[in-house]
Amino acid sequence: MAKAQSPKQVVIEWIDHILDRKKWNGTDLARHCGLAPSTILRLLNNPDHPFVPTITTLQKIANGSGYPIPKKVMAALGADDAKEAAADAEAGESSSRSSRRTTPTVELRHVSSLPSALQSAASPRRDGYVPAPPQLAGDDTAFAFHMPDNSFGQWLKTGTLMYATKRRDPVPGDLVMLTGKDEKTKVRLLVDINESGLSLSKSMPVTEDETMQFDDIKEIAIILVTVRE
Image 1 (spheres, rainbow, N blue to C red):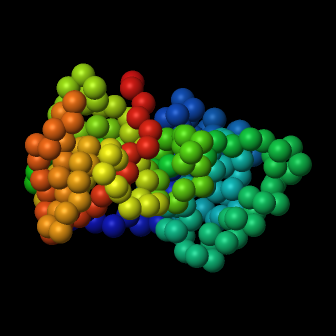
Image 2: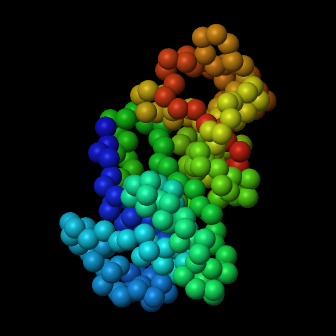
């Protein structure tokens, strides 16, 4: 089982994502956010240092980069800090910054069709964040992931970006993401729900060619948006 991230690791993960998306280095980020370069570089270059930035500093990073503080970061820093962040976001650092439009994001999860024992070796990269489509903005259950296999052939290729939600229960006709207790993830069309489990299809046109028992399911989410890359 993966070791839980520390609050500082969660913050660094978010900053790494911003730098990757913006094609910036730590000094670039500090300059855009009105921070001393040492504030950012101390985080990125010395992860063992006890320094953890304040919510006020994180809000400056959010304002300067255009990437709002994710709920995952707020939660890692505690409920009181999350409330402070929300207040800072509402007030804004200045009139110019408060008027700047930001893009809502959702967590990008790594999922795999491989057995859990092989997943860490196959994909050592960390999770990140991606812009949220309009229909998922404000949905705190939403997340994104890449199609883990090619079970649907040309219809849904491996690597297709998918956005999912757990805001409602799935119903027949939904495209769903299923993660089993063995940590293997698959995408299927939900054909029917019965007393023992789910009837599924991995083909087009739809055929009931697979079943999954409730006791074997660790997580289920409804796919609302797919983005072919």
